[in-house]
Length: 512
Image (cartoon, rainbow, N blue to C red; front, side, top):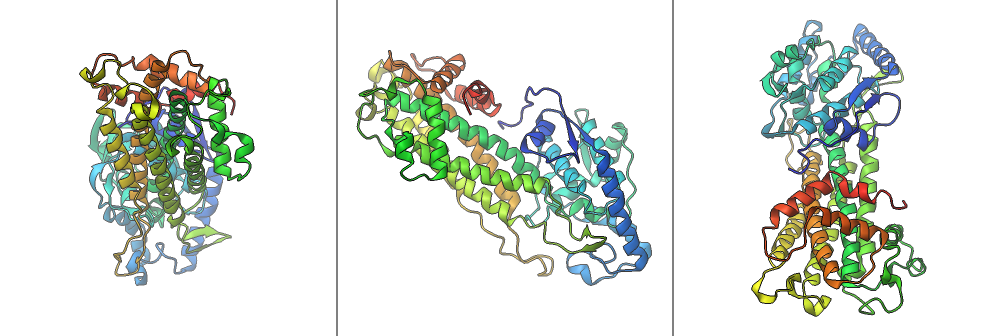
């Protein structure tokens, strides 16, 4: 898995409660080992909200999950002596996940996302739980969480598994070993917290899996789309394409914002290229996979920005129900993630469009009839394969991305005795979004390698500022393909570098 790596990030601290939590902060905690600190204001909010819960209990009010059962059992009133034990049982009973476990980084993203939500002060949780979660992150204690079990209307199963060690159950990884939950907590020097009224529900009733993992997926998707745009620009150079479609005055005739921004980015990458000189292009008009690079990739980046905005709203919001608000508690639907699910579906479809034109450009660069370059970009003719079979890998990646981009749709099977008769299936949509991003990175690696080879076969051309940097980046890691050699491992290694942000760092010197 491309994201199963620790990135070389400078040590930093992420403070919860002083400002918005960003995608970058989630990534830094998940992969970079950033420490987490709770601002003093968090404790103040948590204590105030806990007071609301305690006063509601004293008044004997009927409050969902506090004095009543959960789900279909909302019609069951809890006796006073059952309330605390019920909260611990709620966590144990909902730990029903199956399938492969989340990775270490994904678990860290879950812990951080739930901690950020609790810090808003709407859950009414006992304040010491926030410190316990922070201690887990800083100590490197990572509960075992299996992937399958949440439908996206609160990630109950995932969060129950995440917090099983707090209830004296489950398993957690600590110090490189997977231990029983209580043993891992002792080894990390973290005391088991005491569960009180509403504490179990407060831990569970949120979408930290969907939101935390979406933050990681979007971080990777941004790198993939930027790399794919740089690869496309290098293909324009290699193809000797006509650049009139990205001219500012022509784009302004129909200024679709995503096309405007996509064209701006290509002009920055290509600035200084001899393709801007009269007569440099080979044709008056190129295939659509070259001509439409700006609107297609621009639309994908616009879809990414829309999804990013929603994820950051979720990261900094309170999904609790019931929620503490205005001195009382009331039921909410803030745990519903339909908007996020639809935004990610849109992003997946947009990414599929970008993948398709990338694969088509890659193939056309290898065709003498289209590019005027040697077949399969080898000077040895039919005695060597060159990049011929790479076409199959590009085609397989493009097809897989299109498959993953098919909309998942809402759940159609009612659960909880018919009370929960709708769910957006957000965790599964997040998972396929992450898979799309990883395949896009591989496709970008292939197009970069193929375009770099085609550029070298042209000889004597002048690349733009950004395309020159991209070409140099490829050549530092992938040698020219003269004699045939196994290229799959080189594509995978280059994709890992793209996912680590190395090309983005190289292109960071360009104007914004």
